[in-house]
Length: 67
Image 1 (cartoon, helix red, strand yellow):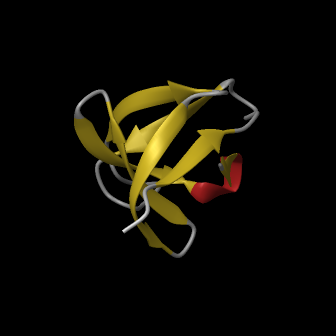
Image 2 (cartoon, rainbow, N blue to C red):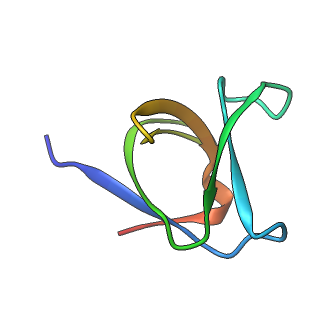
């Protein structure tokens, strides 16, 4: 299975919140910056489950591009 990676693109805040679940109401468990490259675990609608800092979390796919 090929590894899918995404790069965080420019965001209004300058960072992207990583959430525990694929929901805007879910708790923030970290942040990633513009330019960060992340390995994608799975994709659900407009959410990507990614590996970051040894953890797994969800980010909005709106501010990412596949690399």
